Image (cartoon, rainbow, N blue to C red; front, side, top):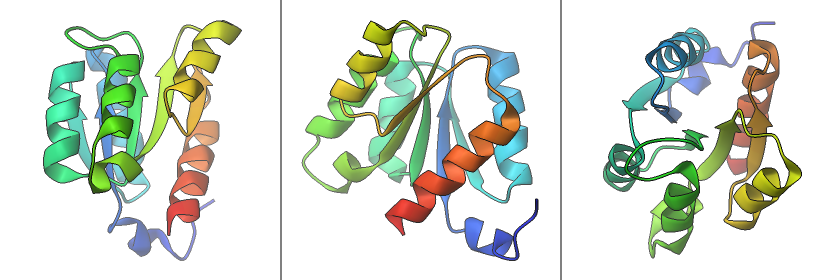
Length: 134
């Protein structure tokens, strides 16, 4: 389902933070195919540095990462004093226990998806989250 507004997506930047190279590559391909600008981070500290530097529209944030977890990053983003704190966060995790989901949302994630997820569901969720922000 290609929208007429795909060009509009070019204004949106998505940071993908995941320490699994295959996941990073497939998410990068998927989001670029949808017309988004993509930035990649391979650990939580790199993700935080890039979020502060580039202030992306949305972060696809893996929970289990080296140096800082997705939970740590989410907490730091929400505690930030400027526009960084408004960055939309979609947490991605193989951890599907209710307590993990609740923790992610309590720390300020806008949404939480458990792996494995369908690419169609992810794209739909990303589009919905970006439309809310516009």
